[in-house]
Image (cartoon, rainbow, N blue to C red; front, top):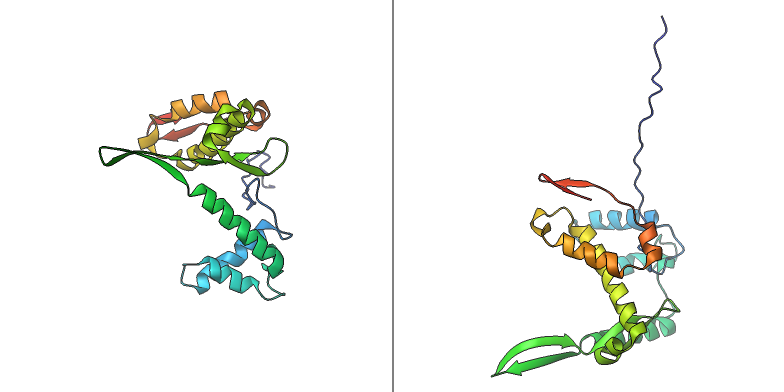
Length: 194
């Protein structure tokens, strides 16, 4: 008697390493980068510093070499731009009342440009006064908040704030992004979340 073959379909789950949206993708697959970083991490006792990755990538034959800019003239200019961004991000306006700091706010904001994949920097006052820039900031806040929510969705201690976050995301996520989102249901310590 022949054995019966099972024709029942089983769902297959796959995983894939990818670069986050918006990251300048190097000409090598994300899986290759991850595999090499895992190897480096093992050789460094589980702890890896950025300089370790740069040193590993320096030889032309390295799997990570093409992920970096090796022309010092170009890299130097990019580093100065990075320093300029950090300089602008570091400025804060503080309010002191009776010798005690009562508030702290950024005075220069990084605003995503709506027509290009770049950012512009402007005073918080200017950004909030212009409807186009204000919308861009709110949409960026929604992206950041959605990412934060996804990262911490399994913490039951945060369950009370998720409805407020979800409402903000409903209002401030652009329609084209809403269409891409898929609903999932997660059960956390007896709390069901959709």
